[in-house]
Image 1 (cartoon, one colour):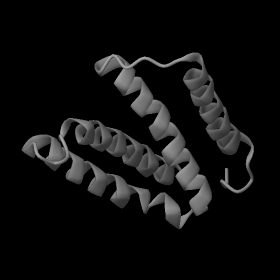
Image 2 (cartoon, helix red, strand yellow; image 1 turned 90 degrees about the vertical axis):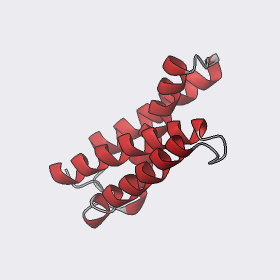
Image 3 (tube, one colour; image 1 turned 180 degrees about the horizontal axis):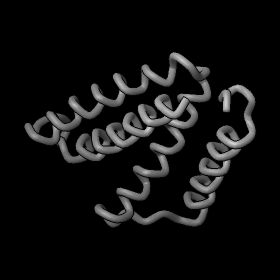
Image 4 (cartoon, rainbow, N blue to C red; image 1 turned 45 degrees about the vertical axis):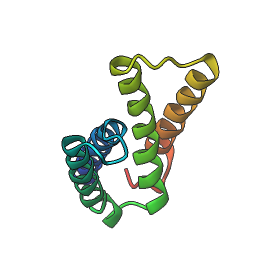
Length: 111
């Protein structure tokens, strides 16, 4: 199970890098951000396939998308100075709580 989580973590990081590059690619008109986007998403989906072998699809996707959303918001805040209002921060906190609840207490994860 540790291997599955390691691949899931790499998939999340690759997706965050790819999404950040996608925002800089100017609709794929800039070469290097476009290359990083394609490579990043390829790595992300390749790595995402590993935890899907041992964990339910819904759980893997919930963790991948939830953690990815929070990390993208943090990257946008730090690097692009994009601010979040109280509702956005509350929503992100609820996403974190949901991912934690799944990982700590769900029997479908296979602890």
